[in-house]
Length: 419
Ligand SMILES: NC(=O)C1=CN([C@@H]2O[C@H](COP(=O)(O)OP(=O)(O)OC[C@H]3O[C@@H](n4cnc5c(N)ncnc54)[C@H](OP(=O)(O)O)[C@@H]3O)[C@@H](O)[C@H]2O)C=CC1
Ligand SMILES: O=C(O)CCC(=O)C(=O)O
Ligand SMILES: [Mg+2]
Image (cartoon, rainbow, N blue to C red; front, top):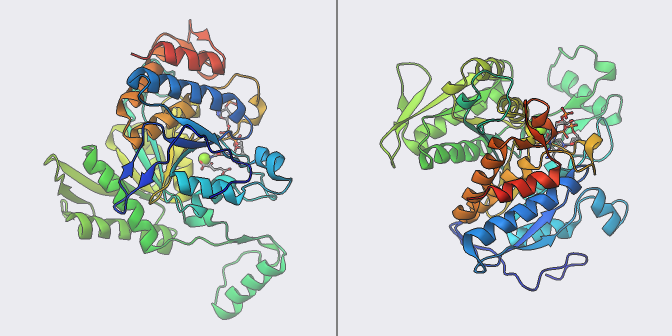
């Protein structure tokens, strides 16, 4: 399609996706990127520099990424006009080019525009938010044995309270819903019905099962010992409780899981390795204490949208903070990679924050493209820079004898340590 503001690089080709969702990745793929608000200006350029260096080191001149800037957030309002936060052609470009990467985007609290990050996930139906949490040797952590935390979160990305169905207290809409609930649905438990905001939490069988299926498939492909369904189903019975029930049901129907020790847990043999994969569940509050006490009991996590948001930051803290927490939003044929953290506005433009989160998101992107060698170089470059104690402020303030680097310098250190 003809784009209005997006400049499609002439020296690149399109990634194409087959009917079975396998990909054809050319040697010069066009990859769209959104710079991001706040610290986006700091972390996006080093991410691109690190990826280019890794690809060149791995494949010489045979392969290179043709980067293509697309817009959302504050930059989009400058390029397209004051009210255009998420231009239609940004979505179109992500659909057309299949794989993209983004910096964080600001969401105002309590009013104003709804989350652009969530809108991107919803519009493109990127229903899996995948966030691996692993420890790099030498990273300062608040826990005694951070190496025991090795989990991959599969957060449902299209439903739950994140769907944004809510009405402000005292609005005619909220009053109408409250009237309906009280007069037609027999609801008597709204404590203050006269000035009450209302939110709706949709959770479906289809949405749950497609997410849990991806989590279990990941456990199979990566020889993981368990998948844990994290929910608050004791309180929210027909949403979070149903998520748990549908998750177990899927494990039985799709993967032939069978009861384990007479309890609710299920298990089946990994068809690729013959090892057992246990499907279990835990209530979210108990989970949050257990990831501190016994993180080694958990491996792949499948959970709802809001739980997954909280769990992502909590687990990231255990292995050194959200400065190195990567993520991917994955749907049918489109994937959009992004850090777990936000725009950290107080540090914007200071060349100070850790770009590791976005660099590791790019590492996930390269692996998704099948460019494993370049991805491995990024991983060992990160590990090397950290082991050499050349780190940004977030680690330096907790590491005796470390050398403090700026954002851009840390990117260069990652490149130097690639081997
Ligand atoms: N996917 C997205 O784009 C997301 C967007 N957001 C949005 O971002 C905005 C700000 O959110 P906020 O709640 O402040 O959360 P942030 O994640 O932006 O920042 C919280 C704190 O985390 C630490 N931090 C974040 N990023 C880094 C980094 N790269 N390196 C080192 N430390 C880092 C800083 O800690 P310290 O102060 O200790 O140095 C920072 O003050 C909001 O508008 C929110 O909606 C939030 C999350 C995700
Ligand atoms: O969209 C936002 O502003 C916040 C989203 C968020 O915290 C997340 O996806 O982890
Ligand atoms: Mg979050």
